Length: 317
Image 1 (cartoon, rainbow, N blue to C red):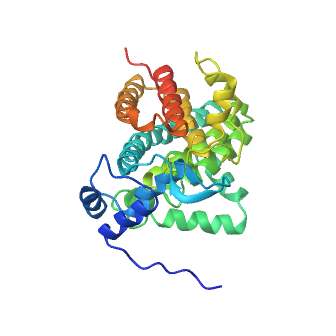
Image 2: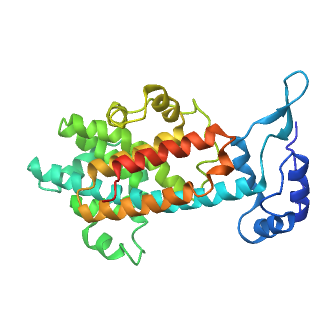
Image 3: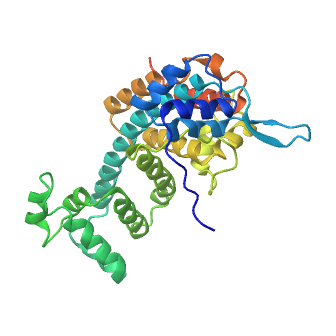
């Protein structure tokens, strides 16, 4: 069976296509919607948020290819909220990455490592394929205007504080796992599970992937960390069913992992305070048009959940 090839459509044709799908244009006019898709965001991304909406049913209760209570203005609003979410959570992810490196260096110092042998031992622990992969990652720094100098100076004898500056986040988490086992640290092992979920959100934000375009339940591949579940249980108004439902969505699970780990690992009050301010600006934007989502409990309940966690874990005096 051959691949289906869809011909490219103009912005006006895409508006007509959306109207055929039952999408209305009461908040944003068809002409303004066409301009938005030409100049601000493409149809493929904007339309992806329709996954959060139900389709109409026929006489036999079977879904037909038309949506219920979906206006283009809702899709546009969700796209903007998602953009603000990516900007906000990318900053939090970078904070977590930085303070994870600091935690590693503290643990290495506390275990009387000299900073050189641990890098050698880590590299020797890798199989041939992973050694080659690490070598390629390190060599990418050779011609970098940012890290080229330290690469050339230290590559023949890498101290851990330089090694951490030259490797990407994924490799840093492999090294984190190595250290967790080397130091027999249960706390680091628990952190690692959460950090891996943080990495997924960090990558999605950095690559400008849509995040809140599928808020349906039971999409997570892994259970929620007990540490996160325990901390969520202390939030007044979040009963067990609400927590379980929200955290069964992998995207929401990842976002909450970022919020949890930022609280746990970021030791700077100034950095945490700045994150809190950013999160509340995002929260205000997320809840700017509550009437848009009155008829969609999937979206409204998710937004309420995120805001409640932000209010409790990142309060502003």
